Image (cartoon, rainbow, N blue to C red; front, side):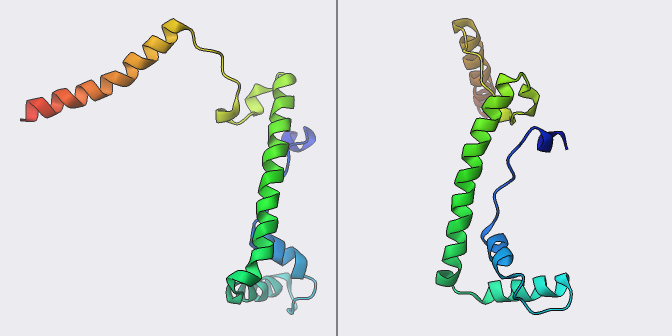
Length: 122
């Protein structure tokens, strides 16, 4: 709920969601569940060329979501709410030469241990 108050963008919609929202009112069925079942069957029967407009709308929505998330995450970082930013998106502190060397040696050690295991097996 807090994310909604802070204005986090809604997730992108799929091509099927676009199709349902466009055709839900006209679909046949007494209950909403029956309407969705009928729309799902119709979606399954559509050819690739008939689905293409909905899939294109979904791609456009993904681009919108990515752009809105970039600006929202930047705004959250600016407000000091880095805890709300996705893990891979946080601005990283630049590495110093010392920490870069530690990272390289840590990465090299698992390979070295694998090589030692292979030699001991032979």
